[in-house]
Every structure is written in C-alpha cells, then in structure tokens.
Image (cartoon, rainbow, N blue to C red; front, side, top):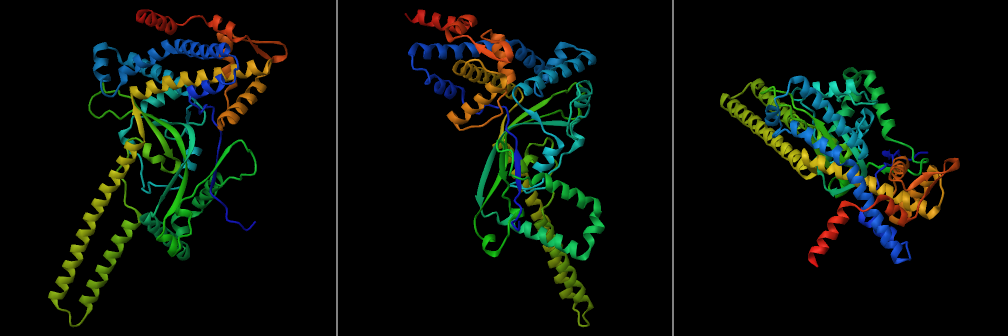
Amino acid sequence: MGKKKKDIIRLERESVVPILKSKLINTMANHFDNNSERSEFVKFCQRVECTIRAWYLLQFEDLMQLYALFDPIHGARKLEQQNLSPEDIDAFELSFLSHLLKVMDKSNFKITTDDEIEVALSAQYRLNLPIIVDESKLDKKLLTRYFMKHPKDNLPHFADKYIIFRRGIGIDHTSGYFFKAKVNTIILRIWRCFLKVTGLKRLIFGKSNKKCNNDSSKQVEISIESEEDDLYVERIRIEKMKLSSTKLLSKVTIQEPTFDRIIVLYRRANTRKENERGIYVKHFKNIPMADLEIVLPEKKNPSLTPMDWVKFLVSAAIGLVTVISSISSPTADIRVIFAILSAVIGYCVKTYFSFQQNLVAYQSLITQSVYEKQLDSGRGTLLHLCDEVIQQEVKEVIISYFILRERGESTRQDIDMHCEELIKEEFGERCNFDVDDAVQKLEKLGIVSQETKGKYSCIDLKRANERMGTTTEEVVLKAKEGDRC
C-alpha cells in the first residue's frame, strides 16, 4: 500500500534445456564411481546422439531440398530448371512451410501472439524511434494459404504477411547518460500534460483509447506474489523514471527482458518477376522486448522524434512572431524586415537539412542494431535449426534416462520433477522439462518400458548400448585408428 507500482513482466519457463551438451555429459559422468560404467555412459550418450541424428536425417534433407527452390538468391533459377507448373510450386511452398513449422516446434520456438507483441512494445528501450512495416512490400498470399490449410490458434494480426517466432528469455542491462532520450521523455510529458489540462486529450483520443491503455498497463504490471517457478523481470526504462536535474545529467542503468532467439519468416511482394518466390528466414539473438521493431521486415523510414518536432515548431513560431512584429511596427524598415525574413528562411532551411541528417542517423542506428543482432539467414538458419532439434532431443533423452537409472521405477510426473530438480541443483538453471517427448524417445530406442500403474523402468547401460548397436560413426573411427596403426 502506498508504494509505487513497478513495471514487472512475468515470463513463463520454456522447455529449452539451457546447458551445453558436453557440460551435461561430463557432469553426469562424474556421478559414476566405476570407470567402466563412466565409459559406458559416455558411449551411451554418443550412440543416443547418432541414433537421433539418423532419425531426422531424411526429414532435414527434405526441408533443405524444398528450401533450395525458394532461396531468395538462387531459388528462381532452380524453379526455372525444374519447369514446374504453378500448382506444383504452390504445393511445394506449403510443403516447405509445413516441414519448417514442425522443425520450429521441435526446436521449442513459439509463434508470438498479439498479446505478447502488445506487452513487448508497450515500452521503449534503446531504440526510441517510431518504426512501422511497409505492408505494401510484403506478400499476403503465401501465409494466408498456409494457415487456411493448417489453422492455428492465437495467430497475430500480421500472420498473413510475416511470422515472428521466439525462444528463450534473458535480461539486458545498459548504462549511459541517454541525454536525448531523457529530453524526449520530458517533452512528451509536457505535451501530455498540456493536452490533459486543455481538454484536447479527450477530444483527440476519445474515451475508448483511455480504456485500452488501462487494459494494456494491467497486462504489463503483474503481481509477483505467486507462481514462484516463473521468472519475473522489472522493466527499468527512461520513460518511467523521475527525471530530476541530477538524474538528467548523470548516468543511469536501464533493464529490459530479452528474447534469446527470434526467427522471422516472410516473403516480399512480387514487383518485378512472377517467378521470384523467395521465402526469407532471418535469425536474431538477444532482442530486447521493447526493441522488437528491430526484427520487423521491410521497415519504413523512421519518422522524427518529439525533440525534432519541437525544434521545428519553436523555430517556425519564433520566426513568424518576429516577422509579424516587425511589419506591424510604424517605423518598419524594409531592409530590416528583409534581413529578418532571410534569417528565418535560412534557419528553416538549416532545420530541414538537420532533419535529413537525423533521418540518416536513425537509419544508420537501425542498420547497426540489425547487424549486431542478426545471427544468420536462409540456409544457415535452417541448418542451425536442424542441429538445435538434435541437441535438445539428445539432452532430454540423456537426462531422463539418467534419472530413471538413479531413481528406479517412476511415473512421468516423477521423472519430470526430478529432471527439473537435477537441472536446477547441478547447473543452476530452470526449465519446463518436456518429459513426454523424452519418454517417447526412450521407448522408441527400446531402453525404457512402461510397467504397471503407469510407472517406467529402464535397462542397464550395457544392455542399452547393445540395444542401440554399433553406430556408423564408431565404425568410421575404428577404421581411422586401423589406418594409423
């Protein structure tokens, strides 16, 4: 009671196991006192990875072959070589998207919803620029056709033009003076106060906007008294700070939750050739939620900030008042009026060119932000996704088998709970472990079986390795060792 309400976001734990596979295996291997058992466990991990990689090989090959037809660089030429009908191309497009979204799901990527986008963009962080998408440059047919055939719940309003996938969460801290951002915030506060005092706010925005704003703020400011397993992050941003004269001239630290990985999928509108059907897949890292505009495709040139508009309006007002007062004077000298008018025009021209310089600076800032945050695109992103699927599945299988071996017969709920406890105690990390997928893979490998009363049990390490058998990689390694001898 009486305390200032903090701007806090609750972030749900995801199913990603945030631990390097090598570190995971080494840590678990150290739990075995017997050297032979430790060696068997390491062999078990290697055979699990080789087997899971083989399971996905054909699926990943189909994905890459389909993408070759829609690669924005070489895809048009390959489509011409294939001599496909428009109907066949449409079918291949939908097949590629179907394969891609399955891989996304296996990699624990989720499609961002309207609610998530609204919460993310309800604040400003480092990129304090008004950025919007030029929708005329984006194709609306491809994704519309796909989601009509494969409907999904909670799709964002822009799902017909582009899709933003997210995975993982983090926190970003930045320290600096942020003088321009502080001044912009002060100007905005003065302007809002002016609109409120004069009653123009209700006239311009109406009552519906007020209600909408209130609802939005409730989504962002969330109580932290329950759901201890979730992550709560306070948004520390300039627009919510008390900007006293001391704080205006001193360094401050701002904080924002981040999306660890973002993938954007879209197609440009056809403006030149009908056979240009390239599909863009771009991969970004560590994107602050409030700066999500960075990843938007086909961005329009940013407009001016409140500080820029104040400069323009103040200079125009001063010039206008000066000229009118000079003309109305009974002893007005035409040369003085001409000099004042020339000075005002010159200043307006200077202001115009400074605006152009600011726009160039804003574009450069966006380009730099994209350059720093973009991991890969196209084929490179798909290869990364395929490897991520394998790595996550391998880690889930290894952890769940280790728990079953240590704990004995267990239900799925017990396996899930002990896996999450292991990750927290051994590595200091938390995740929502995907026990269903892990147990399903163990059953497919034939090393886990379901007993009575819904409990599962596993076979020992030696039998598990025999069940999976010698892998191709082991044969190749033995052949290399024989050549050396």
